[in-house]
Amino acid sequence: MGFIEIQNEFMAHIRKPAINKKPNDIEDRRMAIYRDLFFNNIEGFVSSGFPVLKTLYTDKQWNVLVRQFFSEYDCHSPYFLDIAGEFINYLSSNYKMKKYDPVFMLEIAHYEWVELDVSIAMQNELEKRLKNTDITSASLCLSSLVRNLSYQFPVQNISTSYKPTEPSPQPNYFVVYRDEDDDVQFLATNAMTALLLSIIEASEGSTFDEVCQQVLTHAPQFNAEQIAQGALVTLSAMAERGVIVTKNQD
Image (cartoon, rainbow, N blue to C red; front, top):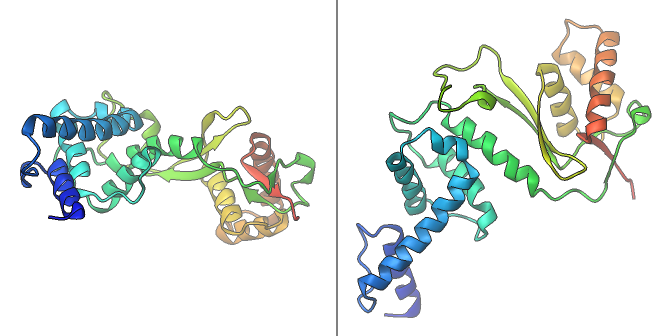
């Protein structure tokens, strides 16, 4: 048996020891060390990345969930920092929910993961802070350190004592961003703010007037003056936080 075949047999046993036999030339005592080491590392990273989600399960249920991820999902990144993102991909694609899984499982997991995502995001070097006086004249961009999000469930309130069974009457909007001190901040927003930011994100480099014109097509119940006034107040607050920026043209 070649080296690659031995490696594949070794990893197959590590991931699914109940199904795949261990390599013949490795004693079980040593193999057990590897089995525990690999799984415990993955379990530790997943648990630290999703502390709220973990509290919603018994220890046995949680270990089953992580074991399924460990056994069934082929991660696309070799880096430990990417394990949480791979776990999100698994839940949203491969995982079949069980009766005891909360209906908001994927949303609370994503809400927890996005903190890590923003904390390690690389800032675009062309971005620069936007002065309030320049909002109406500069090209507008969403910072690379920002995520504009909405959830069906009130994920910010979920805990062992609050586990909603139905979505909220209205979406729950959030902006997650990294501030000047490199701390991750969560800011609850509303539908209009979410719309403004989504337009800026989708049409990077748009001017204030162009953004307002797009908002008008989505909210015809307001006139152009009302939209411009509201957008200026909102975008001024977002510029102060570094949520919207402009870019150097060099």
